[in-house]
Amino acid sequence: MPVGVALAHVALRPSFDCGKCGEPWPCAPAKVELAEQFQADLLGLSTYLGAQMVDAMEQATGNCAWGRVDNLFDRFLGWIPRDRRDRRAA
Image (tube, rainbow, N blue to C red):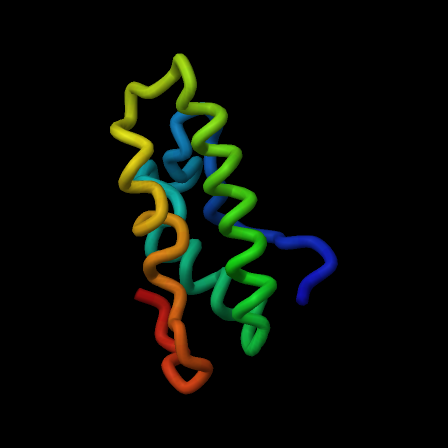
């Protein structure tokens, strides 16, 4: 697992939109970057994105202009391959 995650496409708070392309984060380019940085460490990727999802849920309290929090699992974790053989970022 990477010691520090360095991405060109990062989430802005409190919106959790990408600061580079404006799409909901993690955007498609961020997913590619994350998949490359975490490579075979699906647990590390899941842990990192789970923490980001919790941060987004906390930010949404009182600042929920970007949608409902019940769709955050799919947005943050739903794209991660469940099988190491499926390495494509969605």
